[in-house]
Length: 131
Image 1 (cartoon, helix red, strand yellow):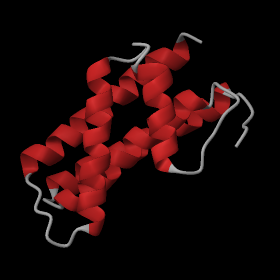
Image 2: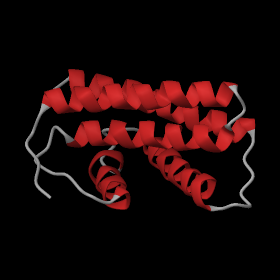
Image 3: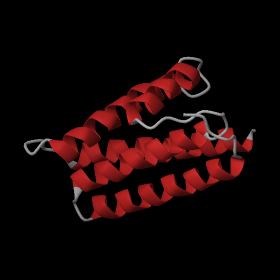
Image 4: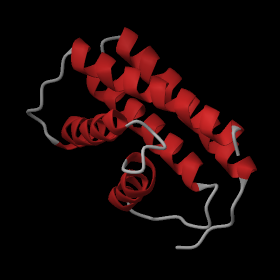
């Protein structure tokens, strides 16, 4: 799906990512780890979508967004390679948290997801500011 290049949309998506992150922190503080994982993932997802707003491209499926980001931004080291693994981990944990009734998550794993989201927001803000 083609999309118009827009720094305004990129900034809007970063704000969405920050809101998701803040919601995740609140949920984490109340020990709602599965829900906090969901918000952390969506913070990551909206951060990635913010980067893609600077290109004339968009995707409907999450896996396509992440695959494109990995190919064009992680593999080329515009963003750290370690972030690619952390994004994939957050995606897996979010899916398990949302869909696997027997999935057990702890505070430490959830904190990792929130840390990834927070770090990616900062990296994305710096990237957008440089454009």
